[in-house]
Amino acid sequence: MNVAMKIVLSMSASASLLILALLTGKRFLKDKVSRQWQYYIWLIVIVRLLLPFAPEINVMDSVRQTVERIQHTPDNVPDRVHFGAPVVSQETDDQKEGAFTETTLADTACQDIFSLLREYTWFIWLLIALGMLMRKITAYQSFIRYVNAGATAVADTGILDRLAEMEKQVGVKRPIEISVNPLIASPMLIGIRHPCIVLPSVNISEKEFYYIMLHELMHYKRWDIWYKWLVQFALCLHWYNPLVYLMSREITKACEFSCDEAVLIKVGHDNAPDYGEVLLDAMAAIGKYKEKLCMQPLNGNKQLLKERLGAIMQWKERSKTTMIVTGALTLGIFFGAAFLGVYPVTVAAHEDITEGKRSDPVMESEEKEISVEMAEKFYEADSMLLFAAAFSDLDEEAQGEWLDRIYADGEIAFLSVCIDDLETDATEIQRLAKKAYADGETGFFSVLADHMSEKTLERWLDKALKEEQIAFQAVLYDKLERNDEWDDRKAAVSAQQLEEYKAYGIVSDGKTYYYKEQLVNVFLDVHEEGKFYTLNMDPRGIVNVKVSRTDDGEIESVGYMTEAEIRDLFGEEN
Image (cartoon, rainbow, N blue to C red; front, side, top):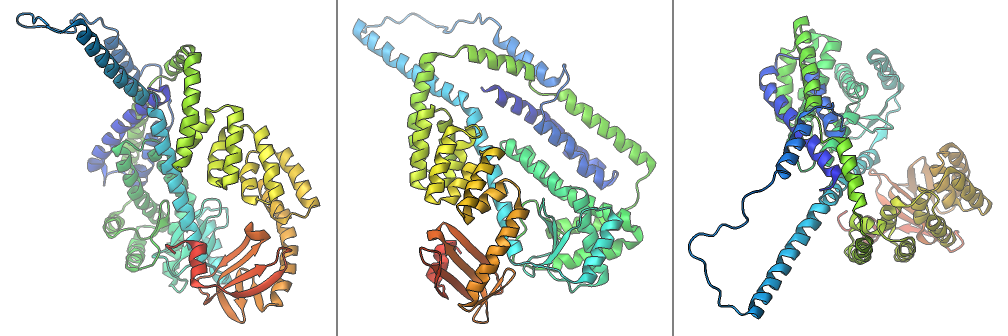
């Protein structure tokens, strides 16, 4: 088994014992210690799941030594024990030799299959972990896009001033955006780099606004979104462990209880009924969007709300004795996590070196041949991650041939996963980038640009500016994180484009488009033979409009999009 897998499994085993201990202790400590302690104590378990730290003497190392002693103990028991009289075989020598050969081949095949599975267990584990993480990230990004598509930024200065004042009271130094989306079920905090509080409506009372904002600001101040993503990362890494899923659910519940407690500490116990009333109102809200992973909605499910309301009404400040007890428990759990330990990293490194010394040139040659065959198989099966693993084992010449094939087939997704193992500014990356630039393939070029140095990106930007390649300029300004400069250039281009639109009855107000005085739902402008798009969506719109252009980039016609065109654009399921 791969040494990395041994370390991960040992971390999982140690954390499992901690999870069982905390779940058992919860039954006795639920109402005796603070909800915030019950929330943050799980961080010790998460650290145990993610970091292979351990003292020199620990439980997992003792288990390893015991297993090794058992494996190296001489086995004095004979392989076969016969009872009764011996049986005289009447088989001929040829029959015996044939039977022996068949048995040997079958045993060898079974051993080879078992060895192969044992050797590549780590790969299956890693493949599933990466797949789960990518799925969670994609789902989160998709939900954010859909919420933002139907959201409108709040411009009321009175509301913004109240929010700014509350941010000062809570201690939030970074301004938080606020928007309205009538389709969501309840107020929520979304976004990581650009956090935003989204409300179903701003037509709420002063009291409701105060408690809603306070609740969401507490989530932001305590970095709850980052905490939840840390949990999801641990869950993906230890996807095979059912106790980690139980831990994830407990942390989700504890997060809301902890946030409620933080709010009550801020406003005082006397205001608990008012805060509980706001939660009840949130429970009655019905929306069209279903809250996804790592959202921070105010309501949650009814059972959880019932428990939260009970905790709110029974809340009281903890005594000093309770604080001392929780401090002692925290130290006990921390030292317990350290004492349980993990599979020793030094031993793992030694095993890795030893394993490397046993490499065989003939075996390496056979593995390369297998990699070529597997690359073809995985590519035809449209399995990107498996293909990327096979691609990494190919030599430079074979990798170059595959990159050309992937480019010719238009498989951007395959390109993105297989070049991750190539070095920055690798020869193959530059060669393919030149081809993509010449062909006007901004999508391929953008993926390749992720593996270029800043100096190389600067050279490409100079070339794009000189040749007035606007689409490539956008990509390169973004990769160089010089979006301010691009915004200035884009503003000049946009002003010129708006003048062109006016001649065809199109008027734009920011991200809102009107065609013949009708609000546009889907606005599509295709540039450079389909390689560059202007796509805008406004759920309030009533018409769908498409701009068609000539090969020279001039507007050829403007018309309404058909239902078939909408389906082709967004997919049949939309």
